Length: 430
Image: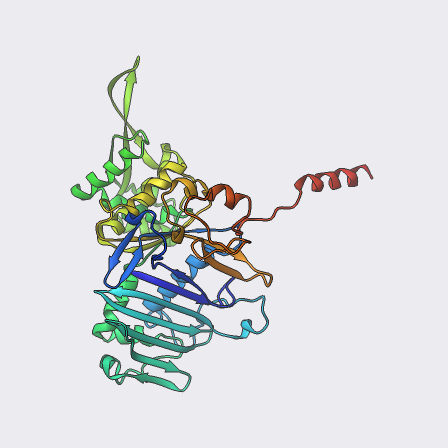
C-alpha cells in the first residue's frame, strides 16, 4: 500500500514534490474513500488535475521510471550503460545534479522508506529504512564512498562489491534471494502503471481473462453494467494461414510462425425486428466496436485484476475516449468497500472537471500540478490550498466552477485566439 511518493530534478520537476496518500484528519467527507492500514489512514484514490504540459504525465512517469529501475537495473542493464533519467533542464545547476526518487509504502504493516539519487552515469546515493512502529531503522545507506549495510539487512552482506555503479543495490540483493529485498521487489512488481491512450498494450491480458470462466463472468458483468450494448464476449481461435504468413518478412513472419492459432475477441449484441428481440448478432470486437468501447474493455482486465489483488495502479489519461459516467464508475469501484475489499489504490491523471462535483472525491484526494515562475512543476492538494483570504477550501465549495475560474490555479491561461486571426487577416490585406 502506497503512503507517499517524492520526486525531484526529473523531467519538469525541479525541487522535490511529494504526493501523499495519507488521509487528512481534518477532512470528514466520504469516509468510505479511506481505509485503515495499521497506524495509517490511507486514501483509495487520488486525482491529478492540471493544464496540458504542466506535469501530470511526468508525475506518473516518475513513478513508472522508479519502478522500472528497481525491477530491472541489476539484470537488464550492462556495465557502462547509461541510466535513462532526464533531469530538469531549465535550471543550469539542476541539469548537473542527480534525479531523486523516494517512496514510502506498507508491506504486512511494516513501513518501508526507500529511495535513490541517480544521473545518467551512476547511482550516487541509495537508502532503505523500515519501521514497525514509530522509530525508523536503517537497513542500508549507499553513498559515493561505498555501501553501509546494517545488521538488520544481513542479506546484503558481501554483495556491495557485486553492485555496479549503474545498478541499484536493492535490486542486486534481490537477485541473490534476499528475503526483505525480494519482498520489496515483489511490491514494485505488483505496482501497475497503465496509460489511457495506449490501451492496446493490455489486449492480451484482458483477452486471456475471457478464457477463465470465473474471470470472464466478472468481466462480462462489468461490460454489461457499462451500458455498451454488449450481452456477451468470447474468444475465437483461428488457424494461422501459411500463405498469409508468407506475406510478411523477418521478425513479424517468425512471430506468426511461432503461433499455432490466432485469437479474435467477439462481442454479442441483441438483434431486433420491429422492436422485438429476435436473437443475437456477433461483432468482430476490434473491427466493429467504438474506440471508447474498446478502451473500456481493454482497461477492464488490469483494473479488475488490481481490485481483486489489492494492487496500487496509476492511470494516465483515464478519461480519454470515455463518457464521464464511465470514468466516474471506474473511480467508484476503487472507493467502494464492496467492490474494493482488498484496498487497491488508484492514482490517475484526468481533465474531466465533472468529477470535482460528482466524483464523490474528498478534498485530500484532489491534487493539482502547475508550472511556477521557473517553469518547474509544483504539486499541491486541494486540502492544503489556501484562498487569497488565507482560509482553506470548504467542503461545500463549488469545486468545478471555482477550478474553471482559476481560483485553485492549475489551469491554462489562454491568450486571445481571435486576435491571432485578426493579425493574419491584416497581414493578408497588406
